Image (cartoon, rainbow, N blue to C red; front, side, top):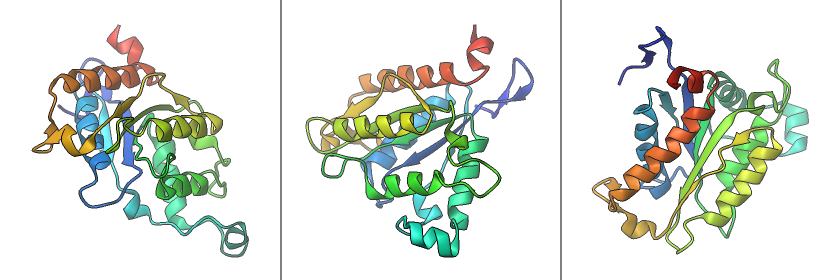
Length: 203
């Protein structure tokens, strides 16, 4: 799969993909990679990043006032702004989103790089997937992230994936239940349909 739109002869639509976990061996990061590959099968260019590479201090208004918004936040904001959509893997900590993910979003809502605070997120299509070791598959955290992203102005795809029993859901870095491949392909197709201009190309 190339990163060009063969039919129209212009760059493919671009999706930025990241996980709310930076843990080595994270199941959510693995799920993100599987979903990113499915996204590419729809002719979409996907950039996978780690929030570890955009490390940020805990958000503090006093810190922002005295030292300004960290450069890593500006770089992450620019990436979000430059891409046509977002693919986010959402782990669940104590029934909600991870501190890593929430803190990154909080810093990215701050202005100072020529863009208004929430401008990078306005009408940005977002697909959320998540997994956990429990029977609900990060469902509560996904609901919280959906509310956060909607409040920030993004357009969250109505469907999402909450994959339960993460410890048994993967085998050799693939999904143990191969029927789930079709589920993820259908979900990523929904995100592709929300990307500006891509729906028209596919019709």
